[in-house]
Length: 389
Image (cartoon, rainbow, N blue to C red):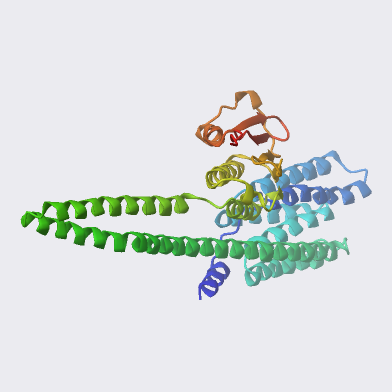
């Protein structure tokens, strides 16, 4: 039921990510290279008057500017930019058949942002208008309609495929978020059951013994009342110890779960993550070390997601000296973003918090900032050696 509702919502009113975001950004910008075919008919028709050349250069410049603005605008603002690019295409076709490339970019934008029926309707109307141009106004060029139609249909197909892939990623992201929510609810219920099981019986016993001690005191049976009071003290200490143990289990984070969860989150945002983590590391570190390392890993991934423009990160967590009583480990994280003002970077609460967490488990943390890779974090354990008797 949950999956059906999510799919229906996405199909009816999807909020498509901008074409200038994520991994689509590189393709959206690099595709402007193909717009240079606009000048091919002009080159083949040389020499041309300076007025014709100036007009076409101006038209192309306006197209590039409009396209760059359009791919950075949300869907509801697109009609104006689409109409302007279409107008440029119609106007330039009288002096330059290369204006057909403009219609292809419109087709790609429509195929990506609009549902299939709507995008097909828009492009059908555009092709009909191009046919009218071919047969009634620019009869001298026999290949204009064919070139414009092929260009538009192919790029419309690319836009539709990109839309389907993006919708699939959005669905997967929503499903993962739903699963995380359900997991959190189940974890809260487990915690409630554990605390109820731990405290329920002990508190009932404490209540009964307190009532019994009160009755014994009212009968001046001090010796038996003292026995019950001592039993109360033992029960309360035992309850406190069990609650502390339960809370400790709750606070402990799973390092593997945290790595897996945050890797998925970055990959949903078009960041490639390469991992090199020893699978049995949890068997060689304490619960406190695992929790602190998990929180450090979470902070590293979060900083990349919030502040970095990286498309690639690496995380390595390797054990050494495994056969000794005190194995050591090294964590390395590389964020391959680019930093322009390295010297102006100041450590905030997040970076200071990672240093403090490293210190709490007797580890040394170092951070370096450079132009590329933008950020490197290294943590090396320095576990004090035990004294063996």
